[in-house]
Length: 206
Ligand SMILES: C[S@@+](CC[C@H](N)C(=O)[O-])C[C@H]1O[C@@H](n2cnc3c(N)ncnc32)[C@H](O)[C@@H]1O
Image (cartoon, rainbow, N blue to C red; front, side, top):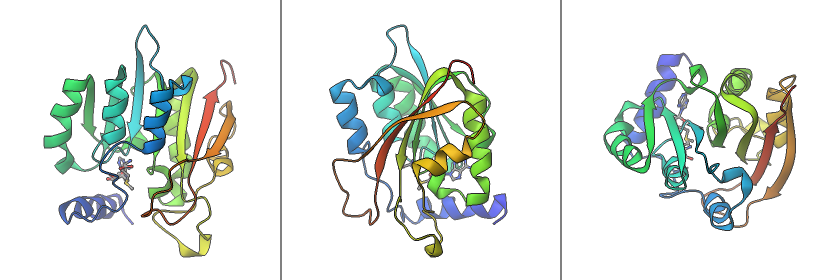
């Protein structure tokens, strides 16, 4: 697909309200981690910046902003703006209509990845890795909802099969370590394949 075709594909999904990935609220695992005070999603007391690429309707971005993060949420689809922009502004964040792969507004202390990577054609994974590399601060957290972990590759996508080791491969040479990967606690009936919560950290020096 050309970039114009991708834009039309995603725009039409929102226009037709054909958005089965949309949970109508933050991902339950993110909510659980916020409630537990898990270090990787807690905003530093002095304030921290978080990036949510391919944010869709912005549920996760809003939850992070309410926790104290200064959030930049990015999506290609202009039609998301009238609802999301004011809500995010009120919560302490910002919505930007843009190609998230081209974002260069770091340093961010957290990048929160939820069904953006698996929505990208696999040939763009290297660009995703470059985007993370450009924007994440040393010691920054990369929190990833890894999905669909067990979708057969032959099925194609989106969502394209995704694994934590594949994510690390996209980041090869960029000084990241995978600290933890655990299955999410609440299985969603609408998500037919495996899903896990992965915590990666950028080393202070690669
Ligand atoms: C499967 S949806 C996930 C949305 C959101 N993260 C969620 O979990 O509800 C993928 C999103 O990525 C957006 N997207 C696809 N390619 C993009 C790009 N290059 N830059 C920014 N957003 C993009 C789509 O418009 C869509 O909102």
